Image 1 (tube, one colour):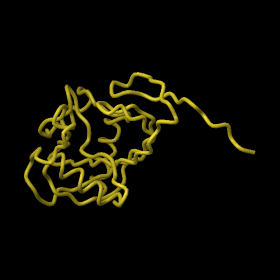
Image 2 (cartoon, rainbow, N blue to C red):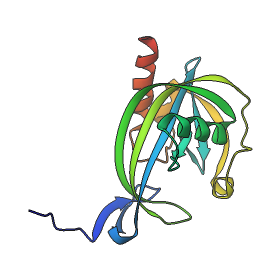
Image 3 (cartoon, one colour):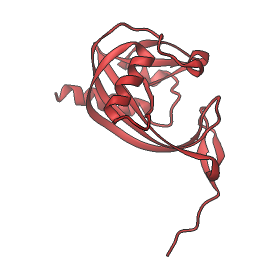
Image 4 (tube, helix red, strand yellow):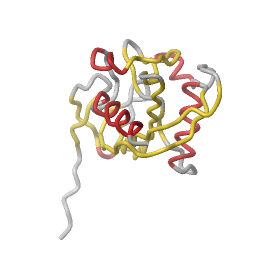
Amino acid sequence: MSKAKKEKIIGQDINKNKVELDVSKMKFRPSVYGVLIENDKVLLSKQWDGYDFPGGAMEIDETIEEALVREFKEETGLEIKVLDVIECRHDFWLTPFTEDHCNSILMYYLVEKIGGEMSVDGFDEHEKQYAGMPEWISINDVEKIKFYNPVDSVAIIKKAVIMLKDK
């Protein structure tokens, strides 16, 4: 028995507003993000008036680890080692600027800094319009800030803190 094909899916935009997405325009977008914690602070990418984890879309010829190392370097200037998966989620969303309709798998990994200097030299043209220098945010303050992503960022950070203590 075949399943009826959907024409529209309800997803969300960057502000977490519900939007109707056209399945015929849908792109598959696996993406990977790093959670770097040092000295009771988490490194976050500054975006508009809020934050997100450093990371982004995988390229077709990359492994998860290769994509995360590349994206983290582009958005922070830092070189990382990928440690453990924290969480994996799914979302349908409308991207800002390009307005792509995306079916996205979002993977979050605990990472460790192994080198580099903080910089935004790796930003692409879109990132230059909305992103700024990454910032170290106290773990105690993460519940007070705005996040631009579809996941429970505070829960991911808390899970990462526990994972670090167990290492």
